[in-house]
Length: 407
Ligand SMILES: C[S@@+](CC[C@H](N)C(=O)[O-])C[C@H]1O[C@@H](n2cnc3c(N)ncnc32)[C@H](O)[C@@H]1O
Image 1 (cartoon, rainbow, N blue to C red):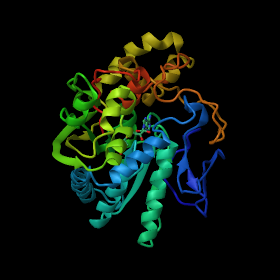
Image 2 (image 1 turned 90 degrees about the vertical axis):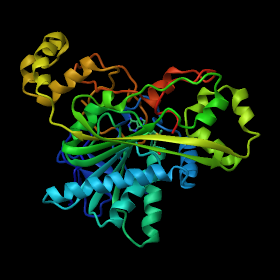
Image 3 (image 1 turned 30 degrees about the vertical axis):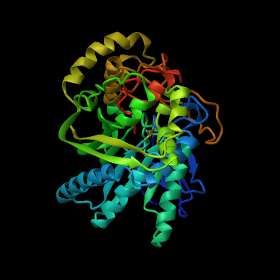
Image 4 (image 1 turned 180 degrees about the vertical axis):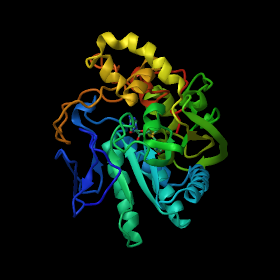
């Protein structure tokens, strides 16, 4: 048995791998088989609100083709440099050698795998976890890792998880560095798994990102006003900000279509605008990525005081009563988050049965309103790609302001 920081999604006990590492189980005998491609599906069927949440297979294929062309490599290189610097600082301070790295919303794994290579090139011992709610994305990431490991005759040194960022199946405060590229921010959920003084690095699109493409797709361009600093809230402190800005030329119709397909511009754009793009064989675009580096702080004490008020507000709908809640500090924090949240989502795992992973009796995952049954069910979710996906119709002529949309 190998010890791990993975948690059982059903009962939250530690998950341990069996000797062959082909399955993992917890002390309550909830068991999870590793898929043929090497990934673990820890997303319970009743935690999904659609059969295939997250990016579709078509989007994953387009994203992989596009990213493999290294069009966005400068973003990845800048991110890797930040991660290596952070990892060296962490290593200098801690006694255990391996650094725990988590890529949240890892997609098909281009950036995660490059993080892994970069840390390995600097001889930084680490464990890499890639997490995404899209099974197709995680399959692609696991396959990528396996193929690259085979090339250098090494075993795969990363763990690929189908799971929701709302309920990350990793031990509390076990992660040294977490990244989140072009994916929704869920600060409360991230704070739970990142160590105190651990790093959280997010990458989002800046105002000029793909402006030339967007001008072709929309009658009117809306200014992006998303501010990750505001959205990460009190529990994270901004320590660095970098902008990666350059121009590059999309050099084939296929590349233009891949880029379109991997972004919500695809469903947001009118058919005639998309049609106009099909005559292009090249297009020079601006890349404008914003990298924000945060450190996780200790939870602000002020929240504990606020909790008293929250308790009054929610006690009527609290199935455990006030005394149970008072004994659960983590739950208190969640309650605060939910009250303050812009969007509250997903109910907690309350079942004792592991729903078969491939079945799809789907119940609410990410963009569902908070369950009224439990006041502790919500997690703060901000500015999302998928939230807006659900809210918008395909035939928009005016570009919506969404900082994650243009990746
Ligand atoms: C725009 S893509 C970015 C993928 C990758 N970070 C990249 O930059 O190539 C957003 C990713 O977030 C995933 N995602 C959306 N909601 C999620 C959630 N609640 N939990 C985990 N992943 C989620 C999607 O499936 C998709 O792969």
